[in-house]
Image (cartoon, rainbow, N blue to C red; front, side, top):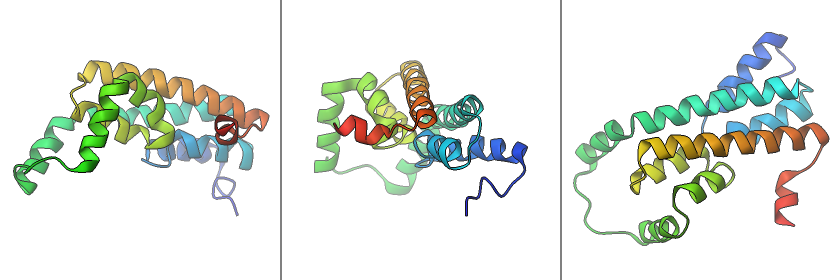
Length: 158
């Protein structure tokens, strides 16, 4: 019961683009599903999933200030730092935007990685560059691994 196999071929690729753009589905989920389960063209799947993911990550980066203003108006000024924020800042200070961008897509999702990077002070231009590079690398790794049947998660875990 694969929803990708139940639709016309053109719509399969439209769905790959759309699902690639959704946080937590993104490239890490849709690429293996589309290639392994639905047997779709790996190059088209990788390209469309990447473009979908990048489109919404760019929107997160572009509209970050608007979101921050809205959140502040709803929540009011913060009253101190939580332990969660302190841990996140420690990780940020250690790895910065490059580390967040490279690890984020698999650990917390690319949208959250971009948001957190800007929240902690990364310039939008740097966030765009690092997130783009990271998503290109992860798309290539996931596409190749899915095409050749390699489980990336088990490979990374050792």
